Length: 98
Image (cartoon, rainbow, N blue to C red; front, side):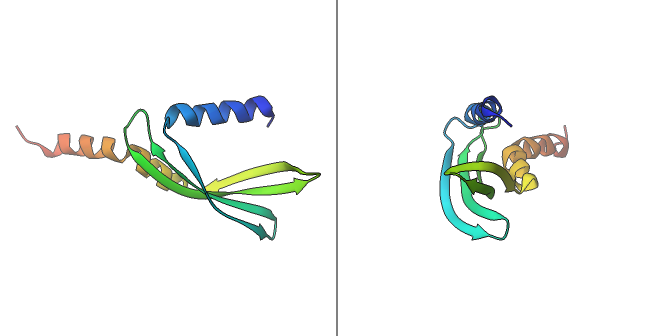
């Protein structure tokens, strides 16, 4: 993953969550590298749903730079928060009788 890929990924998040805040939770040494723990907080631009999801980046540090970074978070929880109202609305449609 190069500079352009990282830039494109960051831009996609900024479009999806225009008010996105990345909160620093912790930085700790793990068995496989440094773990940067974070929480994302923002409102999804298409669904209007507020999300708050935590995860971490596993960093391999060397020569004063991050050589590799792998992100980990609960994808199912992220999807649940982003799309929850949409599904409630759809379920309400099917629950109504005319």
